Image 1 (cartoon, rainbow, N blue to C red):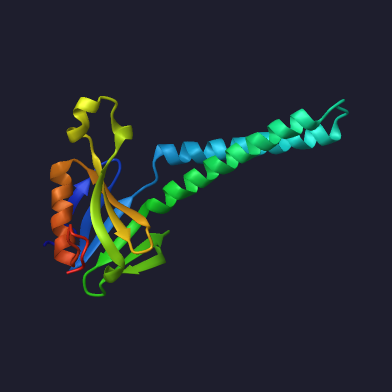
Image 2: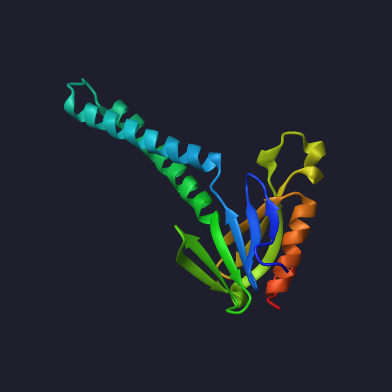
Length: 183
C-alpha cells in the first residue's frame, strides 16, 4: 500500500490511502439530493405563503386554500426528509485500521464515529438511477455500503465491479471483510 494511493475516482466517489492503515472515502452529495432539498424549500415557501394569504385576504371560504397549503407544506416536509436522509448517507469517511474505527467528517471535522465492531455487513447496492435499460443491470455502477448495528447505511464508494473490487481489497487491509465481520 503506497501512501496517497488512489483506489477509485469518479464523479460519485473517491477512495484513497492517506497514510498507513488510513483509508479516506469521499462521496459528495448527488444532484438528486440537491433537487430534493430545492423542492422542499419551494414547497414550504409556497405552502406557507398561500396559507398566510388565505388567512389575511378576504376569501369567502379559506378552507380549501388552507387545505391545499397544508398538503403542499407536508409535501415539502417529505422532500426535506428525503434530502436529509440521502445527505446522511453521503460524506467523507476515514477508516482507521489502528484505531479500528470509522469517522464521518463534516467540513474536515469529526461528526460521527463507529467502531469496527459496530459494522454488521459490507454489501453492494446497484444504483438503478444510473441507467434505464434493465438488460444492462449487471454493468450498472453499484454503491459499496457499510451497514452499522443501528441500521445506518454508510455509502463509502460507487463504481463498476473492478473499481469496487480494489476498494473491497483495501477494506480487507483495514480489517473489514465482505462478510461484515471486523477482522
